[in-house]
Length: 234
Length: 234
DNA sequence: GACAAGACTCGTACAGTGTGCGAGTCCTGA
DNA sequence: TCAGGACTCGCACACTGTACGAGTCTTGTC
Image (tube, rainbow over all chains, first blue to last red; front, side, top):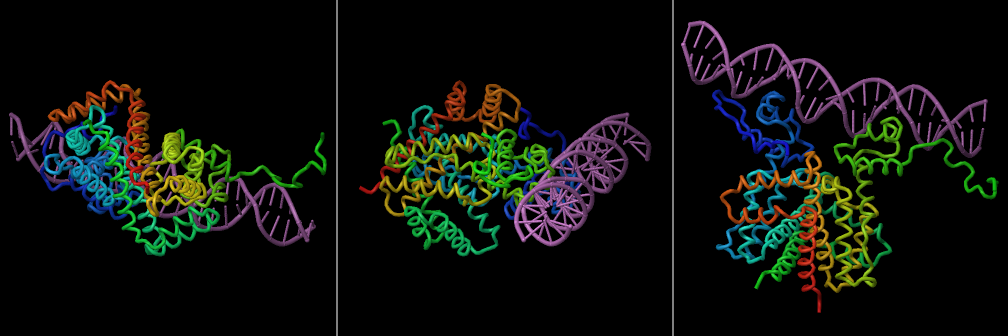
């Protein structure tokens, strides 16, 4: 594997007032969160920091590496309760909710997480604390890894889809209600001959989008945890 | 027989040999599947089709729209069994496996699905057939939507993560084994003080990556379906 | 104080991107 | 023969990431 940004270290100390990696990461995070991935360019980022575009490259090897840093930053925001405090099941629930909230806070994340492995310090720390939590639950051997992986995959899957909807709405320039009505109408026409689908659309048409997302998440998570509980060694 | 007025279907259809949207979509799909999202540019795509770059824009309004077409194309590859044939649970399993296989066939998908809503014809058709399947299972009211959503989210979550690993390996230029050893070694160092993590790493170190992905997927899916089954109305 | 060796900044340049525009070519139907 | 649509495409524009090399500022050693 090529050496990643994590494996490299720098020797000496800075002296005059100077750009720092921390500053850069923070500014980039702001842009990303408010304007999305497409809104982040090295030139704009430099302008925001009041520096020349290519100055950034002394602190960060590459835009891609910068994004690696940002991703790992987000992993640092996720809570993983210690099993003693909450017990396995509610610990897993808290973890799942925290992870979901983090993803919703950083809607650019789904667009980039799947193009690289997550091996930064925060990611691995999250991983290890997660394994402690699931290990304490009493899973056998490799089921620990599988169980935790399932929960994370489920959370990413749902939260990512939620993000997709939200960014679509934002980009459409419509209000949420307008957008929902438009999409429903479009779907109604497209599936006019399908009774099940029409019923589903009717069911959704007068429910608040946010609460529906919440309910769907809780429903799925509960089911998954139920299923996992059945795999615990007795 | 020579073609006569009687056998000739259309007097004058494709007079000049011309680009078609179907051609464009197909060529773009090939590039995407083999070279990834970053490998697709309108100029290269045009070159592959032996045409000028901007000629494409007569057939397709925008690169983004082209990607919408491609996404919907992929949804068309997913099997949704009819409930009469397989029953709900095995139908859902077949569906999940088919969806996963589709995502693995198109590793560029995770990078783009979450930036737009999926409302193309194939996506909506998949949705409605899915609802039929889950509806036949006997879920109450809105649980139909939630149940199907959970399964899809889980599948996307796991398959996306799998894709991330696979593309990382591909981009590293190493063999799978080399890459795995490198990553494990890095993780070992990073979490040297964490017994649970070390144990997990040891567990993974001598297992084939592909079979581990498969096992993890089946494990999680089974758990989720178990949990869902508990929500069926009696 | 002189001087070298970093640490750091940044203007310029290059190759590449998506795509708007307008001119050009071909084909069909009248 | 002519009009008009279908279709192609070169050029140009604004923008991207980043390599390069020349600059400046700071520190440490004589």
